[in-house]
Image (cartoon, rainbow, N blue to C red; front, side, top):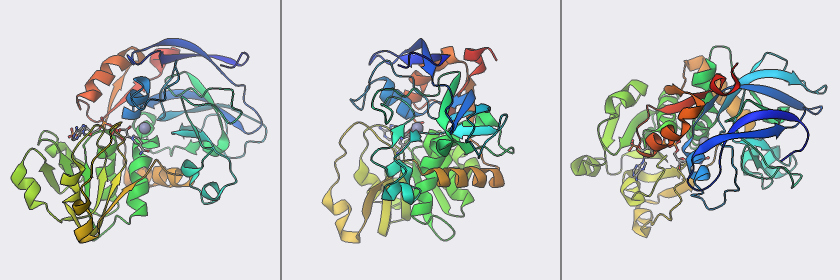
Length: 353
Ligand code: NAP
Ligand code: ZN
């Protein structure tokens, strides 16, 4: 951790038990191209739980999770051109990249091999750990800060910084729009955003969940059809229906079941990242030339495009607002899929402001 800088209250997980507790961290004083952001709200992504509990096997403790950051600019370095004090801004899953490789040149910084995640990894200097949004403030290079349009309330906008962009990017990449049948598997944080975004893009959207308990909500979000995977007949009737499936499932599930629902040349994109290996039968793909793909977040330019799209279409996340001391309880509820549909931490409960 930095020795000098701005002392900052935060919450961190200290072991694979995953419980978060207070930790004081140090943020760097803003350099010439940095923006210092007072964090107002931070969404809780299921990735925070995977990381806090070391489920992906790579966690360095203590880890301060949080990569759905919405806040207000506190101060800017003298070379910052995009932002000024008081602006509403967001930071998502990454805070740096090399800026020179093919991916960076194409605005796909998330695929840069030197990309730096918002928390839990070393900065490019190889010495300083990154700490996430369960904290009072953060210093970020302006290249990795996006503008939150005034139409979007900061609390409902926070989840767009990960759940929003992670579903928007593959929807755009694989051409979701009018005339396309899109299914979203898992009606959770990512899934509920995927339904709203795919519907706003003009696609015909089906929600796929384990039961019917979220059916009415999914339809309010824009799904025209709902499949409960507990209903065998409904699954069979859905065979070869979809051009595109966005799969947000967070723990091991039978991928062959969903692949069966793709049309010829259809694509299922994994954005859900369970720690498990997921067996796929070759004949789930071969006979109808189907594809299984993966996708992670989206570039900064695309993140800004997504936020502007959400402002235009009046799309925010459905949230349950909590205080910082309720994070551990929220983790338990997320693991039971008992959240409608994203927990967002009101950071005034930490900063007192
Ligand atoms: P979430 O809110 O917990 O939602 C996950 C949903 O998956 C649940 O609501 C549930 O939907 C479904 N699900 C969970 N276990 C299942 C099982 N065994 N079988 C079938 N369905 C199951 O989580 P999230 O925040 O949306 O994150 C989802 C996943 O995406 C996590 O693994 C996360 O790490 C990953 N992620 C990836 C990226 C990326 O860049 N690719 C970015 C963010 C998050 P129903 O209750 O409707 O069945
Ligand atoms: Zn996330």
